[in-house]
Every structure is written in structure tokens, then in C-alpha cells.
Amino acid sequence: MDINASDIFTFYESKLGRMVKRTIRQKIMSYLNFTDSNKIYGYGYTSPHLSFIKKYYPKFEVAELRPDFLNGALDEKYEFPEKIIHEYFIPIEPSTVDVVICSHLLEFVEKPLSSIEEIWRILKPNGYLIAILPRRSGLWQRYDNNPFGYGRSYSSRQFKNLVQDFFVIDKKNYFLHFPPWKNYINYKIYKSLENIGENIFPYMGGLMICVCKKIIYAKNSKKQNKIPIKNIVAT
Image (tube, rainbow, N blue to C red; front, side, top):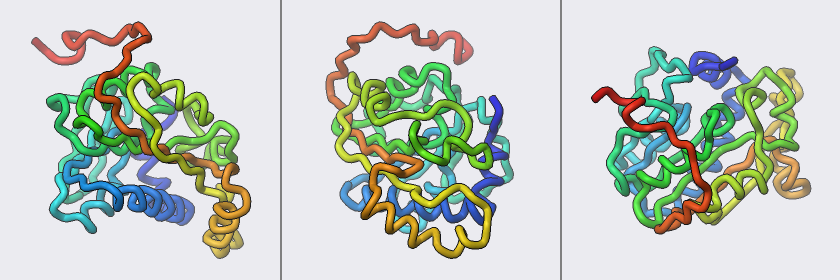
């Protein structure tokens, strides 16, 4: 890996990162308002967004599941548990979670389909996956001054093909229309650029957010080489 949790944390603490963090939070919250969920888990590096959710929905059960490849030992203090897990195995009982928020994960893992299958397994029937992904045609994935410039990026069709056996994409939106530039002008007008992009160039955002509803009976039409559980947990 060329990036870890410390790098992502440092980015979100920067001026440019705070702009991105606020924009992502707004998108996530706009979709959570339409659900009646009370058990929300983050999969990947999601603590900046989960902390905001916990603030506005203090009664919700919130937790972060951070894959071990991110080397997630950070001195972060939040009002929810953070668990370091194997990237392809979530130690949670099936059908117990209402919403999984996935960020900084699918672009890094070698077998994203295995991660998608695990998300499907822990979600309740008709539960939701909210995925934040770098867009293949977006500007942000072309710069390495941000976490979205690392790993793979996705087109809308690629993500649909990835999840189609397990989820139906209920909503999709492209955002982050302002450029990943660290300069005064960008800091001052990023909100205006975001509004202009949303209304005039909606398909040119650097990130996409996909709200996916769990298919109760997964098709499993693709034969997977999933890592055996015995190789992940001690027996």
C-alpha cells in the first residue's frame, strides 16, 4: 500500500481536506435522512463522517470497521468503537446492520468483490450500502495530494457490475466539482464551484456516492475465490 490511515487523517485535517470532509458529510447526511436506521457501521476509513453522524443521531449505534492494511493505529478519540479487522472478514453476525458506509476501501483492496459480499452478509434485509468512490473520469484521482489519487478508480458501469449480484443501486450522485488545488482562490470559491457543478455539470464530479439496497437473495452468479475463514481467524 502507498497510503495508510495516518495519511488519510492528515489530509482531512488540512484546509483542502476539511472542505472535502464537509462536502462528503453533507452528501451522506442527505441520504441518511430518508432512512429509519439505528445501527450504522463504517467500513474502511470513515471516522470523520461517523463522528458527524453520531453528533446528530446520538441514539444510533455507530462503529468503524477499519481494515488492517490501513495500519490504523491512530490516536483518535471518538464516541464510538473502532475495530481493526481483516479486509475480507467482518466479525459481525449476519443480517444485523442497517447501513454500511464504505469509504477508502474498494479502491485499495485486491478483491473488492469479497468485501462487497461481506457487506451484503452483515446487512439486514433491505439494508443499505452507502459507498463513496473516486470517479475514473474525475479530476481528483489524477492528483496524488489526496487519498482519492491512490488505488483504482471506478466508472459508474464498473461499480454497477461489481455490486449487481448483491445490491440494487437506489441512488447515485456525482460531486466534488471544485479542483484538488491548494490555493487561496480555490479555498474562497469552492462552495460556488460545487453549486455550479451540481447544477450545470452534474456528471463531472471527482467522486460519486452510491446508495445501494441489499438484494435479499444474492445471485452469486460469479464463482469467487474467497479467502477461507480459517486463514483469517485463529482456530
